[in-house]
Length: 234
Image 1 (cartoon, helix red, strand yellow):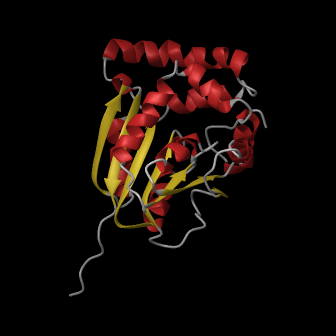
Image 2 (cartoon, rainbow, N blue to C red; image 1 turned 60 degrees about the vertical axis):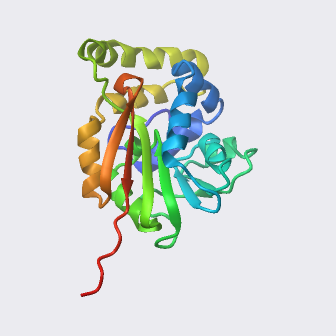
């Protein structure tokens, strides 16, 4: 499978990521000019995992972010539905689980926090995935989403949407094991909701205190939320 379609069929998306697993981390660094490291650092800060907490890193890919979260002393598990990506990170010393974001293999209220970086837009039902994340997080637990977004400066937004996203597949020809996949990735970035619209989806999925922070001029945004406590018995 060279690339998935914008219907985001789970099997096609998984096969596509299997195809880009080789050299995936290097490709990300090249195509983001190294900003991927800075975005991971901000995600780590906002997540603020504590020693002894349990953290689910969903759509974790090769687990590069999971290792950074685990450095806090939290117990962190990398979950992804691409076996190729998980195998690509087999050398990283964190537990790894093959998992479908819409049917997570975890009990209710299992984690103190859940995070997903640059994976939410690849789920074929964003709101359902966010509800499933809420199911496995304890009341009062945290959600942190790092995802592409809409640049806030209008002239740059025009250049980004009309030109930069077209260049990504061309660059991928030189650095990726599956360049065709980056046509899908560019298209999914172009059609992804902006900061406020995504925040509304997060809130509809049952998270409260939803807020977001722009990174790199809004090219990327961090969204966070909290799982509400259950209502007290009457």
